[in-house]
Amino acid sequence: MIATRPAEALPPYQFAWARRAVLLMDIVESVRLIEEDEVGTISRWRDFVEFVKREVVEPRKGRLVKHTGDGMLIDFDDVRSAVSAALAIQQAGARRNASLPVSRQIHLRMGLELADVIVDLQDVLGHGVNLAARLMSLAGPGEIVVSQHVREGLTPSLDADIEDLGDCFVRHVAQPIRAYRIRPPGPRPEVSPLASSDDLVPTVAVVPFTPLQLEEDDHGVIGEAMVEEIIRRMSQSSDLNLISRLSTTAFSGRDATVAEVGAHLRADYVLSGRYSSDGQRVRLSAKLEETRSGRIVWAEEFKDNVSAILNGEQDLIEALIARVFAAMTMRELQRARSQPLPTLRSYTLLMGAINLMHRLSLPDFERAQRLLQEVIDRGGRRPIPMAWLALWHVLRVQQGWSGDPRQDSYLALECTKRALDADPDCSLALAIHGLVHTSLLNRLDIALESYEGALNANPSNPLAWLLKGTLHAFRSEGKLAVEHTARARKLTPLHPFHYFYDSLSATACAAAGEYEEAVKLAERSLRSNRKHTSTWRALTVAQWRLGQQEDARQSVRELMKLQPSLTVSGWLRNSPAAPYPIGRETAEVMRLAGVPE
Image 1: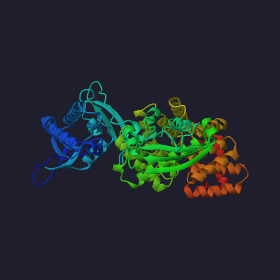
Image 2: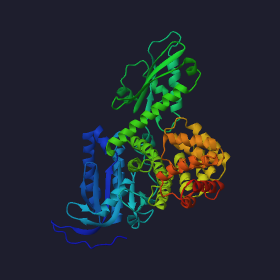
Image 3: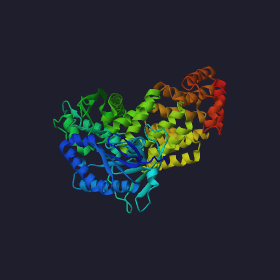
Image 4: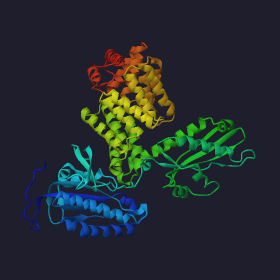
């Protein structure tokens, strides 16, 4: 508990310590609201602040310490008054929103802490105020999050409906905060989220491809066939939102600008193309444009046989889609690295974070964590960024960058728990929850259950197939390991982080005794990313078993450059494969190839 200091007299020029319930709140997406309707938003906010002061705070003997263009700081003598006020403010805001379009509604998020703070006539200062701000960052639109100190002063079902969020880690606070979400007592009100998880991925519109010159035997059929297949293939990806074919057809034959297409379809990118054909061959000039700036972020020319396109062969389509994904990823990565965080969209932050994390360069890796945390702070309970943050902690331990592997293991597990609390059927969260139990906690039974849950939720989740295959590799079940990892690669022929899939597939092949294939996959993975330590271990084992001892020793030298603290005993202590034949074999090969005992 926080030590209590007695309140003191408060001359105008002095301050005093006092135990106060500090309520902090801000407007969700205030920048967007003001940008879209500056006068209206500010006017409604000022009116609401006056209402809160007069009708909510003063009757409960609180004090509106200060307010800004998008937030308020209020303090109260006791917890119950503060909670009553917070609930009343949210209910009053909901009533006012009811008469407004969704895009103009003002949604608040709140944090409440009970602590000894410094009080003067103009402000409230101290660690307790900072904690209230951190608790607020855990709240979603229309939510109130409180601390353990506040929770202790409440009677469940009478004062509020209370939900335990567990230990939550927030920025600039070393130790976790036990946090709780509160709602009005009685039936839970349904709060419509301000934004769905859709804004964590960009939206793409593929507009009809137009012929440079309409041939007599074409009638636009070739362009239609290409667009249909592109949309079909891209719509299978969870990494973007795709505008429907019926919607984009409306722009066929229209001379619309990319900005107009983006505005009408609410798309972030537009993919278009012009083609020509001599009846045998087709030449396509495609480009990807950013709707906000009108900038062409990618353009390329493709050639193929007309018969191949009309028969549904994939070479041209796969190549085009791969280039589009790569261009969007690099554009969002460039934006994430060059612009300040508050100006960036959530999907930019998430795409940038995933890309930087998989580069396995320590400065980029640390930047990835900051980007993921920003997405989480904005989005509250969204499962996807929480799942990716869990993977970040796993990779941190696996790469040997963690100063406290036990702490990172705990944080990874907390991230997946929070993700699954938000969405128990989130396939990505279930897959990474399994990875945490595989790689960090050595609980392969729980991991297998999580992987199977991920595949029940989404049978086409390539990461779940990949990780489940790796689990079988750790258990020396080589045949299953190869089958599952091969299926994962088949589902991700154009994955931007294919090195990861090749790397774990090499481990599976080594477990199955398919050493030549393991070497091929490991070397292909290393061509894309030479910093993944797991790849070097798999390559070492495969080379040694093939009689390529000197190559294996060189692989170990490369591994030790990346992970200089690696020892055989340390690896055995932490590896989930240690109790199985593949683990003992790997340890023996590493020892013979030069890893210190």
